[in-house]
Length: 65
Image: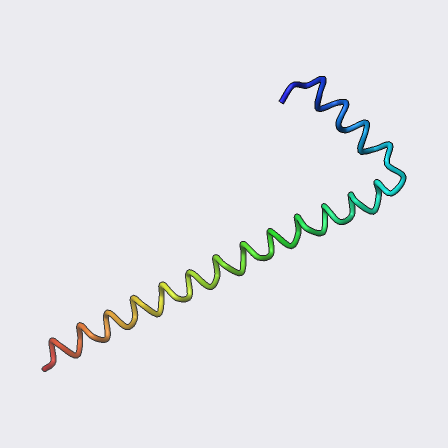
């Protein structure tokens, strides 16, 4: 993005009377995205561990049969 254009956009946003409320909303949304990504990562890791455990269990059952 053109630096001059970016400066104009920032100044326009700051001139809005309720800028602080918008900024708090953006910060909250950012924190929420981080939290959601962490939850997805944890869920993915847990599912992966379960799949590996099930595969190992199946392999042991086949070997003992």
